[in-house]
Amino acid sequence: MRTRSLAAGGTALDEFTERLFGHLPRADQRRWARVYLQGLLSTQGKKSVRRLAASVTASPTASQSLQQFINASPWDWDPARAELLRWVEERHRVHAWTIGQVCFPKRGEHSVGVHRRFDPVAGRIVNCQFGFGLFLSLDGMSVPVDWRLVLPESWSVDPALRRRARISPDAAHRTPESLVLELIDSIAGRTSSVRAPVVADISRLGTAAALIGTLGRRGHDFLVSVPPTLTVRATGPAHGGEPARVPVHAATAGDLARRGNTSRPAAQYAGPATRPQRPPRQHIRSALVRVPGGDPATPGTHQTYRLFGEPSAWPGTGARPGARPGGAVWLTNMSHHRMDDLLHLVRRSGRAAATLGVLADDFGLLDFEGRSFPGWHHHMTVMSAAYAYQGLFSRA
Image 1 (cartoon, helix red, strand yellow):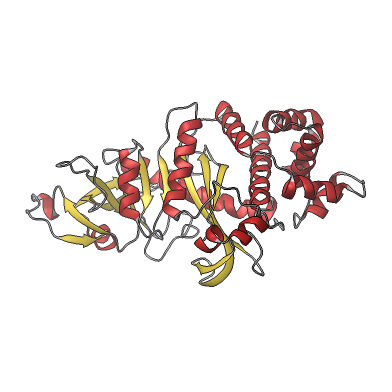
Image 2: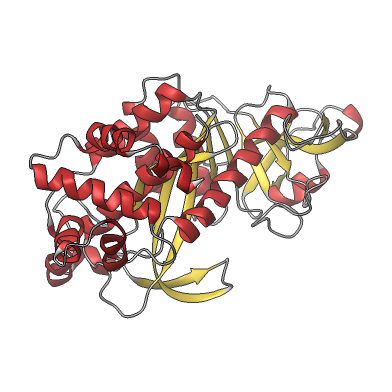
């Protein structure tokens, strides 16, 4: 697939580079943007700057120039990300805006934003950078178009660290929840299409209820994986169709997802291109709930959400990659949607997680060796462009 995209000749890649990076003021910046992009597309193995330069040009100074372009050159990455969004939207229908989170293991203490935190994938505390990406969920693939890096408070308040990492004055310590909202606000202000539902795993974020309420107040349809310990209050029909009694006692999201107070049929399958026949329908336990701290700000109003548990295994595929034992707990304000449609959105979240693996293996997601804040964003921008070009060109 990679060979195919490069075999199309330089014209298509030149046009793509010009569209995304044509805003760069100098011709040499635009030239090195293309070199970095082509290097990410063609270099096998680790995507160090030295290897990227060597795979594209024989110039002995190319590595130094490419390092300068990524780490030191003061170019704005936002216009390139906005143009990448428009480029994708022109070619494919976007079904969801999916938030993915990624841990970047690091050695030492000099990479911007590095700190020690628990990584649930590794199952231990690691020295790392931590960030979020926003993915456009298309038919069969997810494309990253924007990123945020978590800056721990120590990196935000220490002038020496800020100077060393070239952290811009407007970049400050923000909670993970606020960075998620920032990503969503950014795409909402840029998109030329109808707003897509927000799909996100917020099961490890500390203020899930407040984030749920904010998404609703800003007019977003959403489907989010929440902490099983999140406090909710059941509403609507109870077991056997009996009306719920008032007052309704609080319960955890995990307990209520297992019990449910409704039963919704759902046909779970991989998609039209992959299923030989429609598998037996399954019933998903779900509940209508309210979330204390997540209701709209208008006094006297209450938002009803649908809560359901994700099956721990998908028929014909085994356990979903990254799924927690017993399945995740999902909550949505799209309470009148068919369960089939909601489960398709759940699967799109899984595709975004799988995309992170592809980015790590083939596009240098974890290979950035610089230490600056702009350098990290530059690398993530060109890497996202390379993945989009490769994936969407191969499907054309």
